[in-house]
Length: 441
Image 1 (cartoon, rainbow, N blue to C red):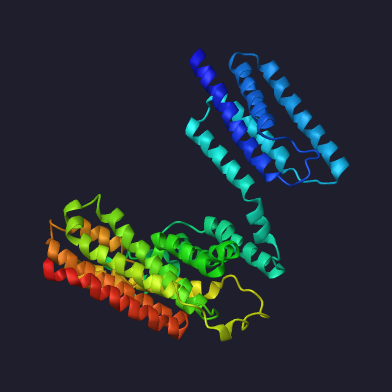
Image 2 (tube, one colour):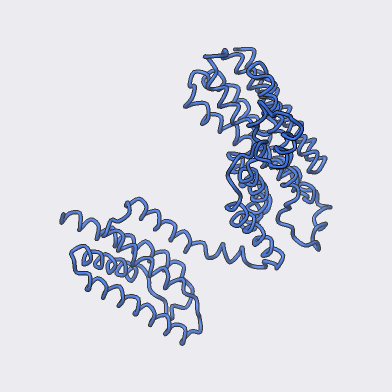
């Protein structure tokens, strides 16, 4: 009991000192007037929080409350003094001091796991340390950019949660059901055909527009070219199709077409890596048999993306967009793409209903226009059981090729023709390389 108590006190001191170190380093070269403090001060603040926790756990609630109220009053008086003397009204240091106090309390009360408390500490230090980056990001933000961020917030935080997470079927359309009933037409096997899940479709819209938004934010921090490359690679783990479509749309008004192609190939590289995560736990034997083909695609995609990312933008196009208002994202192309996905999903399900397992290849090919994750999971489940490893591998090659070519088709519809052509050449290279392992299977 005593050793645990002592350990928690030491932890509280270390946590407080860590926050104090960040505060002290961030204040270097600045006026210290009214500053809450540095390493020693924040260590003592966290210790005060820990002592409050000790008093509370030993039924000295009134003394614990006195510590809390006294600390808050001291913090308020410090803020008022600072504001009156320096005319600076920021409260970052005061809020960080308050958070430090309650981190000390959390360490001692143990009401949440220590790992979560450490997580809170890391997030707090990170937020405090990015002042220069946030200043750089906010500098020169226009009214239109603010409106774009507000619009995206509405799309994600207002529209998405209110949409129903329910797969609507043909029988759920009242007018259609009544009309068919009046005509004595029985829907039969199509009665339970899924048409649309509004929330899942809107997630696609959020993802496509989100790639533009977060790519723009990263671009302000690390440069526009690097920003989209990083964002696209991360988005590829969620949906490489959506990422590619978003980059194609961006290529219409960008001088960095080569870089956008490289970012699109990076997104697909991420999707190839994801295959290991999908297949490995389900069917390790099949994973071993197709691993060389996937590794060839990963290496080829990495080389192709590197070639495109190293290309320089044409100098003559440097100032074409200089006087045009910044458009961070476009909603209409995302809506069009979502509509196309709805059509493809319905056709896929009709194909499965009509042909059953005999239409497995057909339905898989059609389904690959939307994405291959679900198909790969299905293949992993069937390989070595209902179908041979080689047939499963052939199906994988076909759907992967179809998926890559479908992305080229989307790129042609939504983006720059040059982008579509270069991505097509990249896709063909990946298809050819992935098929080489057939000679050894």
